[in-house]
Image (cartoon, rainbow, N blue to C red):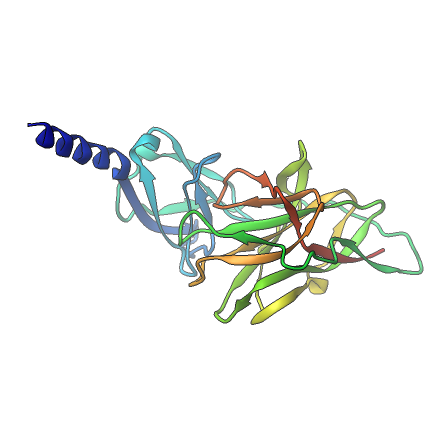
Length: 269
């Protein structure tokens, strides 16, 4: 009798742990064009997903989050929030409305331009930051605070990759404002996606053609799009503060604990 009760308890417990709702569909604009790489998630949770190159998405929602709201976010479009309990499991297509983007003018007054690096240009040997997303079809981001004293143009963004990259890895470069010591809202409304070079070492992403001008402190972030890789390790430096990570779309930012990720930007002013 005790054995039967024990098995029944285990069965019920497993139902509670694994009970979830799977939602899938496509994200498009109001003209019917699919929108790739849309961040989808429940804010301040570990639940997230990214739409693929054709705008298709699949996300698993735990039963405990059924009464929450699913957020769809993409550069150039209004954020859309939908009550999860109102979403059907399959073919739940989502339409995002285009958003008018007003760019702030940043003036660089120096006649003689100078170029320099800001951030962590070195690393501690044998020290690295392992990073992975909570879901295989979702993102993770490594980021660093960049302090600027005058208006600058960002020429490139750099991150040290400790892992040997052999497969195709795409990276979205994001620029965030600083809010309460953590990355906040997007400062640059551009969907800048680039391929990472194979191998390991410093990876440089040329941003010259993007014409990115900033006149305030910002957070530079490397958003790793889903790939066949399970985990990527990044070079780090002990004592390098103001380094951040998040492990899913629209998730919570947290500070890297033991060491800061080796990230820097080259700027001109």
